[in-house]
Amino acid sequence: MRVALIGNMNNNFFSLMRYLRDAGVDAELLLFADEINHFLPEHDTWEIGKWKPFIKQTKIRGGALGQYFSMSATDIRREFEGYDYYIGCGFAPAYFYKAGMKLDLFTPYCVGIEYTYRITKTKPVHYLKEKIEAYYQTKGLKHNTKVVGTIDEESKMKAESMGVQTQPLPMLMIYNKEQAEAEDDFLKTTINTFKQHYPVVFSHVSHFPKGSRTWRIKRNDILIKGFADFAKQSAANSLLVLFNYGEAVEESKTLIQELGIADKVLWLPVMSRKKIMLLLEYVHFGGGEFGGAVWGGTGWEFMAKGVPFFQYVDMPDTIFEANTGMQMPPFFNTNDSAQICTLLAHYSVNKEALQSKGQALQAWFNQEAGQDLANKYLRILKS
Image (cartoon, rainbow, N blue to C red; front, side, top):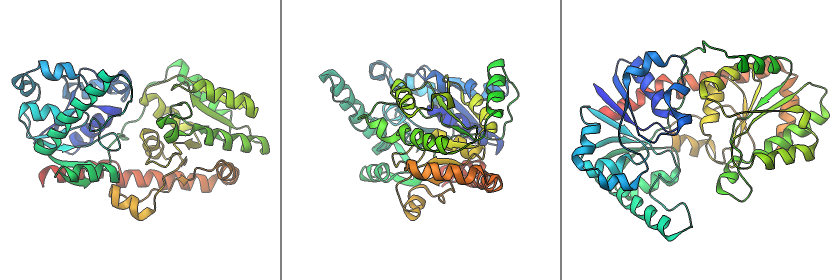
């Protein structure tokens, strides 16, 4: 059984490839030519040599409309052919439409399905480009895609309106069977800093400006304010860890100065997931996103490492389970700074309860989002 995984947004498919190979499947990762550097496989594993033989570099640029027209159907088929099953993300449906090939499973990485709607309101040439992309992406979904895996109602309804079968199917984002084997001097220094503080609250969510669509999802300010209230009332030597990542880092730094907690905040540079996963072994609380959406990569990373984390998911458990096919995990579901402060105060002095919370999250991940989830992908392919 040969399976091709096309695209690697957030290293989702590199994680899936490893789980599939562990299950005895001959799975290979086919990278687009314009993958974001941060999401290349070598940044997600300490064992790249082990997996490199199963990673192929295609000549196809995932979001390049000009290349879409310059490449012939034969050219595209030459890049993809030779597999029994195909799983894709990004612009894969459009390419399969042009090549006349069947995409067995599509897993969107954007709510509402990427490339099927306009995102910007800028120059007419951008509008035209996005309309053309949406046209061919929709064609690929309607005519060349067998199943769309979704975790949100908007994507599910859009796919079904095109006549495409859907399945509740989370993205398989983290491979957690690997132990970090390398520590550079920077990591050693950072870990030593963590060891000198308790509790360490860690948030590697990107920062975006107020008013932007992304800011409404991230809402870093909620965590910052909650931590500030806790730090002011607690004698603990606490530390808030944030990343220099996103367009509104300076706005967050200004807020931290205004709240008087600059001496309790450590800013880290953008780094690879394999390094983040090592640091998480020394973290006590995680901070996710507070705009109401289901968590992104940061939440999966916290759960894979058993780190209790704050996140806001604005839906009842029953709706969450219907949309995702998973039970709601036992994270701290809140978007209230005062409640974050209260939870930090309670759990930081109840270390056994905090440890139990982390163990429950990791057990949930292993059952719902690791090898068992990869096996669900296989069942969908074979159905």
